[in-house]
Length: 178
Image 1 (cartoon, rainbow, N blue to C red):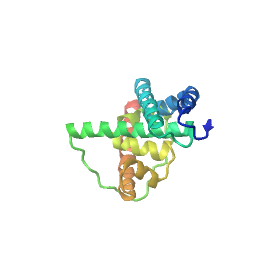
Image 2: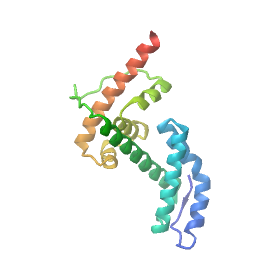
Image 3: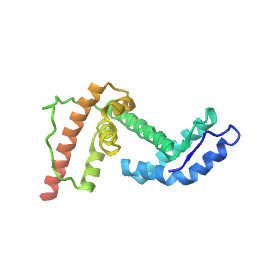
Image 4: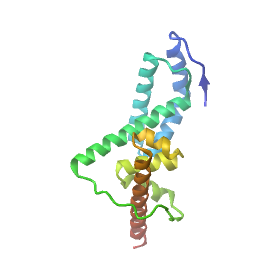
C-alpha cells in the first residue's frame, strides 16, 4: 500500500490521481468482500472516490494512502447500512431480542459461501456490526465509535447479531439438508 507525504495544495490533485490508479482495486475488493454484490461495490467505490476528492479539495490529508481510502470506504459502507436500516425501520419495526447469555459458545465450522449469504439476509445493523467486528477485526470500542453507539449498546447488538446469524445460518443448513 502506497503512502505519500502531505502534498502542497497545488499538487494534491496529481498525488490523488496517482493514488487513485493504484488504490482503486484495493478499495473495490474491500467493498466487494463485505457487501457481496458487484453493482453495490462499484457504487460504493464511486462514492468513496467522490468523498475522497471532496476531502482533498477542502483540506488535503497529511497522508494520502490506500489505507486512508479504505477508511473512507469503510465509512461509506457503514453509511449505506445505516440508510438501509432506516428504510427497513420505516417499513416495519424490529423486534428486540433479549440476550440469552453473556458467552457465545457457538463453535461451528462455517461454510464461507453460506456465511456470506447468511450475512446478506441479516438486518443492516446486524450486518454492519458483524462485518466491522469480525471481518475488519476491529475492537468493540472502535466499532461503537463508527456506529455512533455506546460500547455497552454495541456489545448488546453483537449478541443479538450473532444470535440472528446463528439462526439464519442453521435455517440455511437445514434447508440444504432437506
